[in-house]
Image 1 (tube, rainbow over the protein chains, first blue to last red):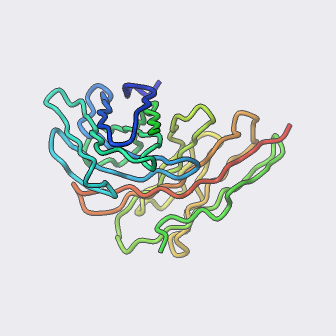
Image 2 (image 1 turned 90 degrees about the horizontal axis):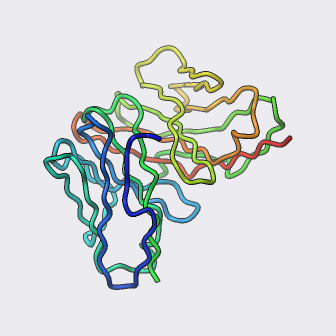
Length: 114
Length: 116
């Protein structure tokens, strides 16, 4: 158990819908990262937050947005969903924004868009 | 151009033998970090080992070692004495960018199967 929690574990929805994925980092970790892993693909970095502020952006679509709240949990919002958005979405946390060492990954949310 | 290249989509190794998983990277940054993660069939991402670009010694963590060749821009993972539980997908990743704006890039992975 990495200490990072993600809810829900599975999500099935229809095209055009909007969903929210939630992540709680490890206790004391200020930095949260979001990744997308499509079937049999590597991880695509989406976005990073540190202590409530956006710090880095990867290949995140305009239909996707994220935020980190004062209690440090983070939410990833996906809107106008398309079939291609079906993927495993990971959240990871580290203690500081500098991330010298490992990221601790949550179990992931598997999103299926029908 | 690929920033992280893992050229072996799949590999087999006999139990108790050593195996090397290849990873090459491309960056113009002087300061960067290299990581290896394991993803078993259950889906979770498990951190294995980290190498900083300024680290002179190769990183080791138990049965895992990272063969870091900076001039060749390679960061191969060596697993010694393979076990059946090592069967999984393995990802090489790189952290680059300036302080406060780090990005992480993952390779496409190598699927390792350990044979009894």
